[in-house]
Structure formats: C-alpha cells, structure tokens
Image (cartoon, rainbow, N blue to C red):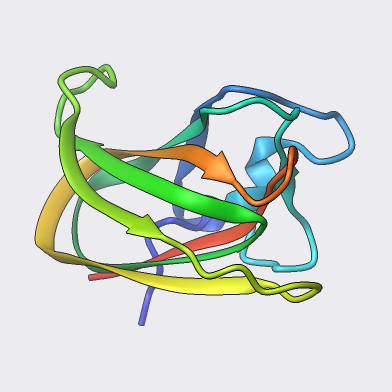
Length: 134
C-alpha cells in the first residue's frame, strides 16, 4: 500500500512548534523509524503534514517516544486553515521502547493533518514516523 505521508511522494512538514537541527521535523515523513523529530520540552507541541493532494485516510500510525496525549485535526483548505477535530488518543507508556499507535480515521479526507501533542510522559518527546493508510 502506498503511504501518502512520505516525503518521497510529495508530503511536507509545513509547521513544527520546535526544531533541533540534529532532529528536524522532516524526519517524521522520511519513512525511517531510526530518524526522528524531537520536541524542545514544553507542551503542547505540534506539527502539520501537507499531502501532495487531498488524501482519503482510514488509519494513521504514529511511532514515537514519551507521547501521552495526542489530538489530530484535519483541513481541506489550500492554506492550512479551518482545522476540524478528527481524533484524540492517550498512548500507553512503554519504558525504553518505541510506542506504536494506530489511530482510526474512518475514511476522512484531508489536505493537511495537524498533530497536537498535548502532554508527554517526560519533558521531551520524539516522533519517529507517521504513516497513513487510505
């Protein structure tokens, strides 16, 4: 199955609330769980992914560390405005291991997805990969 959230297929991280030059937000969509984006220690933290075109989604999978609560919003606009709530999830804490969480999206369509990390299990969180199924 083709993952429209990959940078190689035209997806972009158009906004991230924090950035570390060693762990840039673009790592979220490079398809590699060995690379990652790291927050700077305050909450909420967020990032927005823009797809190459409007995309129908049934499931989002997020690979991360120390994320406790996540909210996902979508937008169909051309300029990343008018976001609507899609899903919210509390993640289980897994000490020393990558968290892998599936979030069902019920066939929603979006041009942009905004991921808002409202809390974490530590001061810093990392997101290693986001993948989308249609």
